[in-house]
Length: 260
Length: 260
DNA sequence: ACTTAGTGAATGGTACTACCAATCAAAGGG
DNA sequence: CCCTTTGATTGGTAGTACCATTCACTAAGT
Image (cartoon, rainbow over all chains, first blue to last red; front, side, top):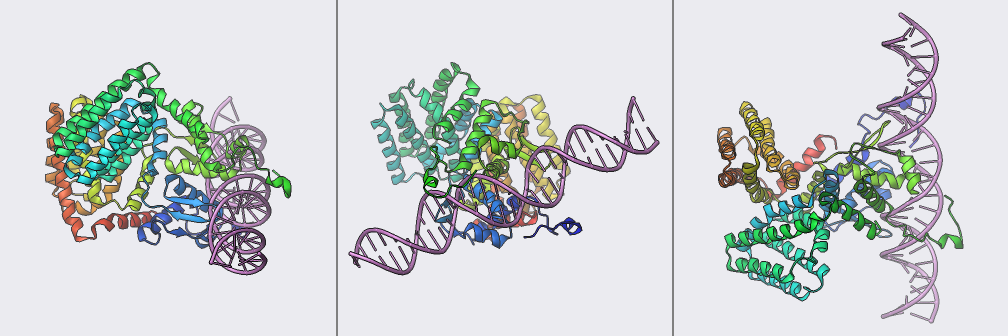
């Protein structure tokens, strides 16, 4: 494209030229909703896309980068750009910034879990199939194997809750609180040393038992019991530190660790 | 920087050069958590930042674009780049893509509300101050004024629920379900014509009454009652359309409308 | 002295080019 | 038939040029 100099340059295009990147993101949103782009599908090369849309590769790449960070697409050098299938990690990046900017405390995160997870447990008790219960037992068994290895124990604990989310059948809550769990994860790893593994495992067993019986009310109560217990323990530990700032500091350290 | 040609070119930098944009995002995350960047603060100019970090403006702009779409920063031409304060809209863009990619149905969104909002109403009943109840009454009064104007009625309805979120005191749930509400919004606007405004207002009044009394259990029940009612009505309407695809089509249309 | 118009520097937005490194597929040789 | 090599393709980064907007400073006018 030529750069116009002089009076003609003032004649900007009829359609607003502003926020090209934002509009491109909207275009991709449409392409996905139209079904033109399907999960797993391959997008045209950046240079072709830029030509097609009549924009520069710079602007196009900005839009694609946003989609990539969101987890909507995956880009591989020498290969191409692909539309991801369901992306449970889309929200996590945004959530981290939200926690930082709003100064959301650990207590608030746990409170959110306390609001949602008991009800999810109740629904899991109703919807659980025999296979689901088997999955849950498997996860629990792995936790027992790892009860001496605290970092892996915490991982398994989160897996337990996420499995429960899946069984509950509501992906919206499942996705959202997977993110919350990721944020809580690091702090739990710190305090897990103080937690009695046997105690945690017992509380989990109670939840599983309630779900196996299909007793929604008991599952709800047991989950609340478990989370309140965890909140109390973690609060005691967190009290020794600067409560609110702790999570942000951890986020910082973690980011530096993995080279990001 | 000079482009090396020949044997020297193979000597890539010691630190991995990959994913510069991703690393930059991590850097900004650190700067925020360190307190170097504070909400409302102004960032250096793009050209300076690029020099400081030793990257090209192209790469830096990709990172900044991601942050801008997320709502972390605001960029104004001729002025500069500023770090936003708390950003309740950070998740909305991600959430829209998530709904599209995972094909999340309207029913699933409403189910998520049914899981969370009754409990939030219960907590609101406990925590509500006289001022909070006044706010809630104000919102309700505005709804009554607009009960003939359906689009505005739906807006006011969402404001009612969001006010309730605020009162409940948990920002995590508040933020997350504000996004859910935005997604549900358009479909509600379609079906609101079938909803009897008086009926909805009555259900709202019951919730307010329960909160004013400080009766958590009743607030929980009333909210569940309200949402189940709404779900039932909307399901009846949605049945006439292609249920799952409807929301995506609406999203598409809405995106085209505002020129994005 | 105060206001106002104007000028210029700084800033974000876009376009374009050049080059690199990784990948893949097709051609060629064993 | 299998392996290697080569070449084209693709995403990733750097760098430059130009535009439009904004802001602050200056100078003219009152």
